[in-house]
Image 1 (cartoon, helix red, strand yellow):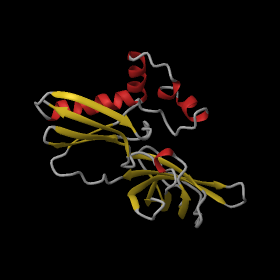
Image 2 (cartoon, rainbow, N blue to C red):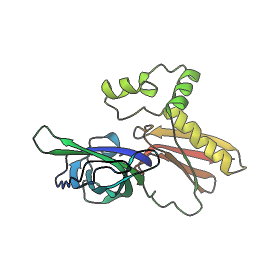
Image 3 (spheres, rainbow, N blue to C red):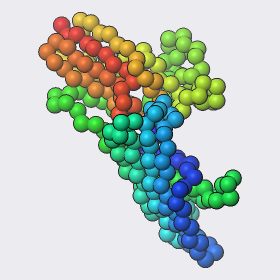
Length: 239
């Protein structure tokens, strides 16, 4: 869904509890709480067709921090299930802020900002791995170096509003180069052959995990998005 680090969830809560407190004063802010559970089928490419559940609870503590922000406590939980019911991902997070406002239906709408801690799938023993965060500068520079003018790689507005992507698209050749670099960093043996194929788009919404699994002269490689699903597969043959 989103990234390790800060994430923003706009959700119409199925269960919503509000408790208003006294007017804010110096070094104080309104006490307010919210709880909710949201269930839907994922519409983002990384969750397409999967059942996604969010549960959250948050409370404004009535205190102001050194920066003048109201202190917030709470927990956030995300579960992603494949259509067959298999649990694909189970993530936890800490609520860092939230806002509450009216919804179009006359109810309430909660906007929750959380810090998510996602657990990566276990790796086979002896695997090589590297985690990196693609950003707009990297994608723009690679587009310039390869004379690739497609705006899905560097124009966030175009990628989302015109093409319907949730973020900037990471180039397939860039991902392949990073996987080849993982091999070079992990073994002194030179590569004799390298091939790759894309299986799903990868975006700049969160860290990419590069994984290499050596087996004799062959190395099976994949680049995984924040949801743990592979976006590009590759095979390296060592000399």
